[in-house]
Amino acid sequence: MNSDQNSQQNPQQNSQQHPQPDLQNGRPAVFLDRDGVLNIEAGYIYELENLNLIPGVAQAVRRLNDRGLFCCLVSNQSGPARGYYPRSHVDNLHERLCRLLHKEAGARLDAIYYCPDLSPPEGGTVAEFARWTAWRKPNTGMLVAAAWEHNLDIRRSFMVGDKATDVDLAHNAGCKGILVQTGYGDRVLSGAYQHQTQPDHVAENLAAAVEWICAA
Image (cartoon, rainbow, N blue to C red; front, side, top):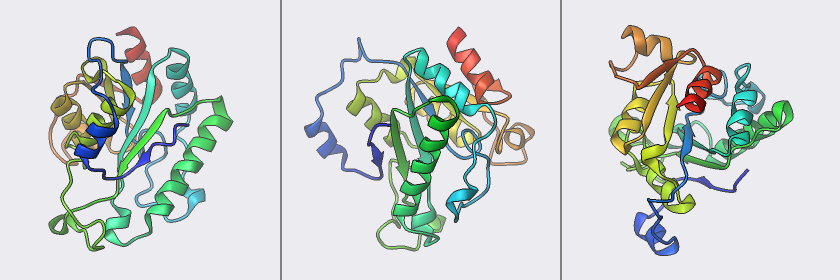
């Protein structure tokens, strides 16, 4: 796993540290939401052992690895902003996630980006993280940072998520948005959660999403 377990960074600092990506030769990527896509949706996860993979996801990620597609986690994780647990707990959850992926199928995530921030009107109470940020989905900050740092072509990439905001992120950034029916996906489709959205593809789960990506 790449060591990019990032929270909010200064975009100007990023542009100084990383050369402008070559958009003509950038790599396609598959951006993956976490809860409800890779691991079983369990709300805010306070205990590490409560993070468990959805059956078949490790094999699906391994298939992306074998195809040479850059696999990047992008996740809103507002627990630190809400005061539920420290940011180090989110890092520990991601370490467990990567161990489980590797143990089950030899799969890996090439980079991990997450946003611990949340504005006060939305429920952010911890001063360090209680702020508006361009990194929080459906804003595009995490995808833009990943593209700059890893020379990715967002236009040829895919975003897989279980929420309308994941699809909104994909369209805001200019990539294809896939809605999986695990996690909150079925409720998004029925109109019972968040808002109506128009994904480029609806898949039963991550394995089906990967099938579609590989055929695209």
